[in-house]
Amino acid sequence: MRAASALALAAFAASLGMTSPSLAAEPAGDGGGKVATVGRRTITRVELEEHVRPKLIEIENEKYEALREGLDDLVAEELEKQEAKAKGITVDDLQRQEVAAKISAPTDEEIQKLYDENKAQLGGQSLDQIKPRIVEYLKQQKTDQRRAAFIEELKKKYKTTVALRPPVIDIGTAGRPEKGGGPKAPVTIVEFSDYQCPFCSRAEVTVDEVMKVYGDKVRLVYRDFPLPMHPQARPAAEAANCASAQGKFWPYHAKLFANQSALGEDKLKEYAKDVGLDTGKFDQCLATKPFKAAIDKDIADASKVGVTGTPAFFINGRMLSGAQPLDKFKEVIDEELRAKTASR
Image 1 (cartoon, one colour):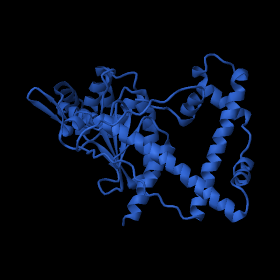
Image 2 (cartoon, rainbow, N blue to C red):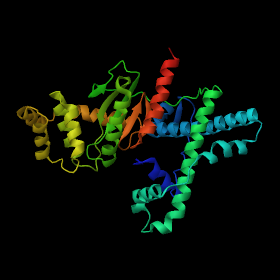
Image 3 (cartoon, one colour):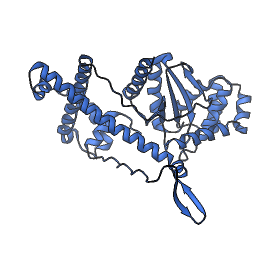
């Protein structure tokens, strides 16, 4: 999974030549009928779609993102046309007045900060060598931010509604650990994560910010998806479930993410003592693994809906992959809150 640590890093890396994968083609077929026969065996369209369900979900999400991006462009263009007409000027003049004239030049501090954040990906180039490209990137970033803000201003002036809805994936909570607003919260976030995953650790900071911003409006449900490449992730998940059995899931959960480089069994037991667990019960739980089936179900459920890496989030069924920034969470959550309000 491509898990970006920050939008600026991802966008800047892209500006240096990174490419995006192409979309896969949709499978052909005839409704729910047969798509192939092998001897006496018939393979149906239903069976085929179930077999490739994760890929189809991924394609559907990519299709929605392409449609939404295109729709946003069309809406923005129309808003600018209407505003330009109202002011009796051209769209180009409007953009110069409302966008170009209202952005500041990148400061030395901003240039240095972006260079430092991306230094490892710049192949040893010095700040002087890369500075013109950084300046150009920051100018474009500021232009995009100002134009986005201007478009939001215009949406308030010219009533704008968007009927296009994203694909929603039915993903249950499976009775797993949760916090926040409870089942009545208008927004439920189901998180699939891995205690040894560095991107997951970064995402935890953002998730904590989300919970502070939205309070009881958001219900957060944690589900396990330990990756095979992380040998200590599964034992850590077992340990967290043992802590949950004693009502201390979230303190123990935080302890694990704060100590990703030390998840050996001795440390798992030490953390249990640190958060005030009954160590005898915890040690027995860790040895007998009573939550194996629950973790296996988490992994199976995630795989069925297209999760291939961590972290992965489902916000009211809308998939959000990777360590996304707070603004991306807010964008989706705010849309869901508006949709809930509109449906009342």
